[in-house]
Amino acid sequence: MTSISSRDLAMQSVRKLFLIIVLCLIATGASGADRNSPVVKAVAGARDAVVNIRTEKVMQRRSQSLFGFGDSVFDQFFHEMMPLGSYKTESLGSGVIIDRVGHILTNAHVVDKASRIFVAMTGSGREFEAQLIGQDSRIDLAVLKIIQPGDYSFLPPARSDDLMLGETVIAIGNPLGLGHSITTGIISSTKRRVQLSEQLTSVFIQTDALINPGNSGGPLININGELIGINTAIARQAQGIGFSIPIDTAKRVVNDLIAYGRVRHAYLGLVVGEVSSAFVRSYGESGVLVEDVEPDSPAQKARLQIADVILAIDEVPLASVAQYYAELQTYTPGDLLPLSVLRGDKVVSLKAELTALPAGYQMAYTRSTFGFSVRQGQRGLVIDEVLNGSPAERVGLNAGDMVVKIEDVSVQKLAEFEQTMEEYLGQKPLRFTVVRDNVAYLIELP
Image 1 (spheres, rainbow, N blue to C red):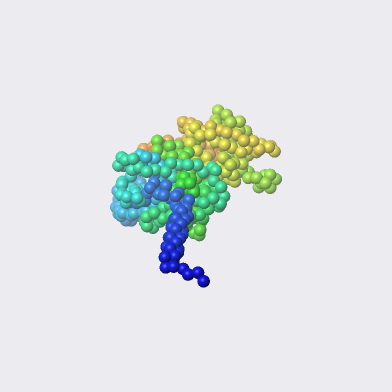
Image 2 (spheres, rainbow, N blue to C red):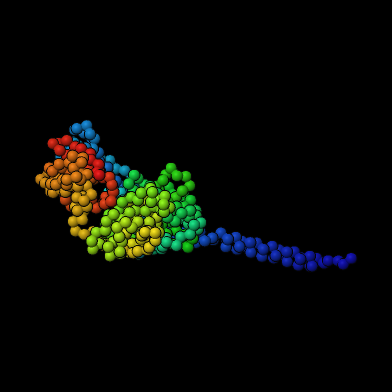
């Protein structure tokens, strides 16, 4: 039997100990590499550009109503007799810095009616005051700017036209004021149309990354840490479903929000109507029917014709006139509008270069669509003409009636009337509040 010396035993023990140490080091290194996943890297690159938004709102309410109608049209005439009470509320949301000077992209509803806006940096915890630069409630987007000058970390908008079903996405936000919250999921639809109200529809990226009200306005990023969407909490009753505004939509309007404080309406120059159910059955397609093409308009220059059926705008299918206008409002003057058009039995692709609305278009639209025109009176806006056979005549409107509201927006001056009509272009029916002999009537046209 071969004897093993104590020296040999000691050497074997040293070798074993060395091997154990090496294996531990290898295991620890492999574990660290595995944990530093693409999601971790994406979040690390984007998180410094995400801000928590805190807003203060001063709300006012009437302490009583003289006529028993609550918030009635008579308030504008008798407001001095109805004392106001006020109270302050706070709300929370999220946003993402998109350039180094401190412009922040968020949802319009996060900052709507805010008297003061504060943004907190998640890295340093520092809070800065911000100002509202522009917003558009139809698209639910707003741009803020940090008041204090600085060179801020930012996340530039990427693209959302190349998204793939099933790819991993990450939502970052500020739910319930808890600071940065990160949820992951996959894309289940790149262009999901959602009915937001009776008149309003929008197209979203749909994911299963959880999005709560405090996440609204925060970024949706891809696995490379690129900004591909703005999260919005629009369907609170939907479990496990998140919606985000595609960043391509935001990129089309962000310059207008910064330069003009709003999204300018783009002019195409079409009168469109619904297609028949027989058309849908025959062609297996839906869309909107071109009923008229205005002379010298972008539509005419793009060779659109009466009886064409517009099937899609930029590959987003259309099923109603409301959807047509909802999609059109995400474009601004100067944009190229890609159209898929059914002409006869052939589908053709056209592009129209949109322009700004022609001068006086809002008033001409009011006459042609609803059948009346207004002028400035001493106490407000007065109907000065009702067209024969028009929707306005059929409901009994008369010259001399006063128009005080369009939908829920008070209008007292022609400029207010034009701006409000511009906001509701294409929406039918539209509600007008009309006063005759000190009696208010709510009229729906057509």
